[in-house]
Image (cartoon, rainbow, N blue to C red; front, side):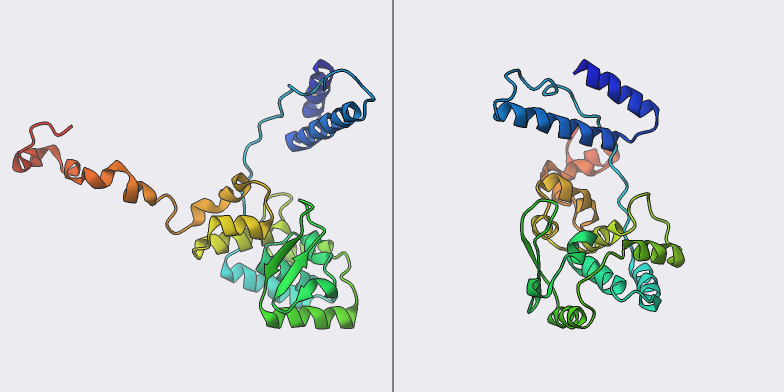
Length: 245
């Protein structure tokens, strides 16, 4: 554990991101756990008690209606046959770019998409407009399987003039779906299932966008039973209370 902690400190000093170092710690822990499970080692996992680096929560950028329109105008002008449709799938389902890119005709139903190569390794089904489902099937029949075109999307973002945090070019579509879903009154638990998050904590990053976020403070907290305390002290004589608190 000490050796790894020293190695990690040196890596931080060279500019390696804390998230990368946390991933390395997870991989190495898993290695020792598997060796112990297989009976190859008898000692305890030496990294079991080593803490991951606490990360500052990253800013989540999302696009408004005007930015979405500008972006898709640029995407439709590009010569690549797949980039605009893949971006559309990400925008309306909240899926990751790789999940959309891996779609096949057999996974496109009447009004639904089935994602199987997901980050969580769990199959996920998301409803879509039947017209879009038909368009996807027609596109795949005409042009064949989706090909890797993430670079073309990144190019479209630059051409649109959008300023996004590092590493969030194609992921901004996923954040945009989630943000608009919550802002329009969508349920946070439903969003968790749509996005495929393994824990609700991941999905709660979008909760502050809900129109009634934390309004239960007013509805169910003690404030509703003690509103007469909210008057200024000068009004205490009118209420007959010398010292209400």
